[in-house]
Image (cartoon, rainbow over all chains, first blue to last red; front, side, top):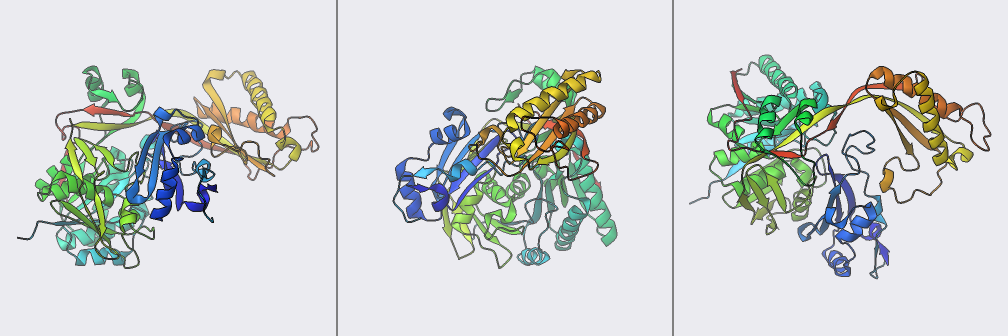
Length: 107
Length: 454
């Protein structure tokens, strides 16, 4: 078992327009990306459970050219609306960091 | 025969972010067909579209525009700026046009300028709504006439067509209101006869300039477009485009890295091949353009109310251990005191953000139970008037400071306030209000172009 934060190159969040947040998980080693991909852990259902949304509301794309996964979901509160806490959506990535990947690697 | 190619430069991610003058010089030495810069984004929130203020300062925009304008006019090539002033409303556009006129006067420059307005008339939008032409995106609610009436400002996101029209009319400086970010570059490439697919792909890379390069920096990017390829290379010798950096840009601030909805079609890059030509130049092939019925995305802001905030913090472990019940008490007690002023509870709301607990992620915070040493609180009142916001906030502040709780050890006050005055008026605040498209046959009809000889 290894946590994503110890093997990924980037785990990030950002607005995709004012009403959506997009999460990117990126690797910089093709082998490692393939290994993680084979575990099947990174999937729409996982993202949905981490962020308390329905799987059907997660637009999920595997993007091998960037050794990346992208998941886009509705924001809790639209950017800048009353009660919003993160106008740019750039600090909503933390739940990704602790995703456990069942591979054997010296992290 | 050599294939037709077009070279285009993007100065930086947003007008006013700055770029090294040496990169612009390097670009001009390569004889680009145009230089451009994107001016806006919805990313900094609804304030700019709502208030009409520009995102970046006039000084910063003038510095960038002065270099770009002299570079363009001196080399006889067009300068194009998309989504002027941050939000692309009429006020934002006029601010940028004024800056251009000022720079031209200072340097004795003369040229034909096109200013493309994207702010939409409410009467026109109501007509379109009645005709069933305004459609919600994703799961957005249907829009009603009163939503349009209550808007402060609504802009349409133009495609490349108005820019092409202005190029055809011989404009050398083209300032656009709100548009889809790639629009100026797409227009230029298509003006020179290149097809949609590589033109749109190039535009998407260019809109964020050196975001497609490493290391990440606000700097100029040069892209070469051909019939069936796009090549990209940064101008600063310290930066590189790699297949990875270009692929990463495809993930930037969008919902999908491979499918991008634009007015009049979809850019599909699922089968793109991205290859390194040198250690800092990349070639991309295999992009596709799938035409769709033409539609313009609408962006709108409405006033959400007037805001006042105070920043307070507690270092008291006893209080931190019972933060949730204490805040529930603060809400209830504030509400009683505000009612005593004759203020109707429906005219204001109290928003508490607890930094150290879940101030950043709110309901998404997975680690709510960790116990912090100190907690900062931003208390906000959003109300129908600034007077109500100020009055209610003042009572919320006193309630935070002077309320009892079980086991209280320091009766002098529960909160440390870093400032006097502690309360800050924020004035009117705005909300984004539209995730809708308008189906329209003529890509030009919503975007009047005003020409002037500067």
